[in-house]
Amino acid sequence: MSSEALVGEYFSKGTLSALPSGHFIDGVFVDATGGRGMETFDPGSARAFHTFAAGDGNDVDRAVAAARKAQRDWGRTKAGVRGAILFRAAQIIRAEAARLAVVESLDSGKALQEAEGDVAGAARCFEYYAGAADKIQGDTFPLGTDYIGYSIEEPVGVTAHIIPWNYPLSTAARSIAPALAAGCTVVAKPAEQTPLTALMLADILFRAGLPAGVCNVVTGTGAEAGGPLVSHPDVRHVTFTGSVPTGIRVMQSAAANVTSVVLELGGKSPVIVMADADLDAAIEGVLGAIYENAGQICSAGSRLVVERKVHAELVERIAARANGLKLGHGLRRPQVGALNSAAHLNKVAGYVEGARERGVAIAAGGQRAVDPESGTGWFFQPTILDAVQADDPVIQEEIFGPVLSVQVVEGEEEAVAIANGTDFGLVAGIYTRDFGRAHRMARDIEAGQIYINEYFAGGIEVPFGGSKLSGFGREKGLEALRSYTRTKSLAAKIS
Ligand code: NAI
Ligand code: MG
Image (cartoon, rainbow, N blue to C red; front, side):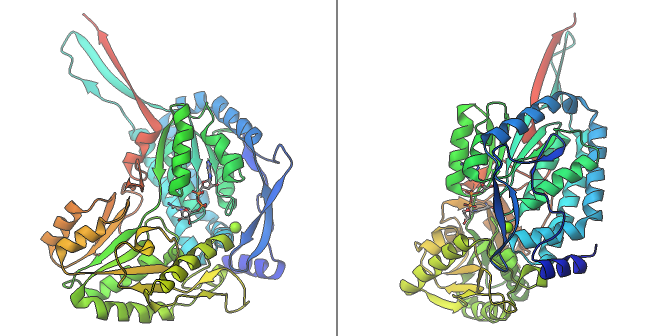
């Protein structure tokens, strides 16, 4: 079915047919052991549109047991065969892209064209790790002629994947694909706000030839399903993407079993615009950095750090563009979609209210909004908070919404100090025409990745992760495979 037909079906029926409802365990969809369900909402209309399994520790036990049972054979499957299955999964994702994108947009609130980009990215991710599967190899050690020394890279075993609601399919793909390529089995727990596309992905992988039990998905809340998963003694590695407090709790649970973790947590990433920059390019970069996915991106460029000489012009031009952005239900392909939940909208609105009360200047937006066609939904206007002090909460804390906070600096040195002036260290963007300056600043900024003259430059090839409170470990790129392999060294005396 085309995306137009699917969108038509949703707006006439208030739901879509054939959405997954159960956990995906051992190759089949199953009901929750406890028989409970919970609703998922369409943020663009603030209405529930589907019920899915509310899992608990019993469901997690079933899924981990299935993964554990499948682990030995999958880990010993020829790497090229594993890669071929991942490649077939990528082809199915592309063939079923319209449906995946419509479901992703509906469940998360994001604009359909952005969801289509996410689906293409997920396919690309499976292709990338399909190709990598048979390039995972060990080393030899120079022990002299009387010895042979070598290493093999073994799969770590059962891996847990805790997935957030802002990029449900992309985040699932970027951790599940390298885990499978490395020969690990998977139990994934999508966010309770957006459970559907992870379930669809597990089904696609099964249809692509992945053996039963290798990739399982358990749905439910963080407390009831996520907690038991990350503390399960048979789980050997946890990849977590989400908030700092939950990440700390996950790390503590994993520590009890000495399980390794990768934590992709929040950010408060600066986009630095120096006076010598190509301002047209910088404006596009800043707008995309903060208003894509309504700012619900861990790597959003949520702080504009601008040199005073161009501050007034830049803020005026960005504000004019921000005021003109069209909000709306994700399936109507707006420029800015909904926020993911009522609770999250309240959090974002609370930050802006607080700033207003402290006397911060609001250069654009600043109010809640609704889908103009239906008059409902969880929306917030694209907002700019201007010339904010460095210690203000809207500078120091992750808002995770379409709210840009502007900081004015006098030059390169202060720009670097301000960029480094939060507890986070995920991303920094730098706009300047001075090549040496760009690389000096990149050297001195503490962040997992630096974008120069194009925010969000790069793709699956580029390792991604944080420093400081933004977490540790890397996803994407070949480096991601390291989370899912463990080196076994061998040394043998031969004469
Ligand atoms: P969260 O960190 O609580 O949720 C993320 C995932 O963790 C979800 O799948 C959730 O079910 C799961 N989870 C929750 N508690 C768990 C536990 N004890 N054990 C295992 N898994 C657990 O984040 P939440 O409440 O959805 O959003 C709060 C804030 O976190 C947002 O406002 C935003 O600032 C930030 N956030 C950052 C994300 C990122 O991409 N870095 C993604 C989502 C949220
Ligand atoms: Mg939803």
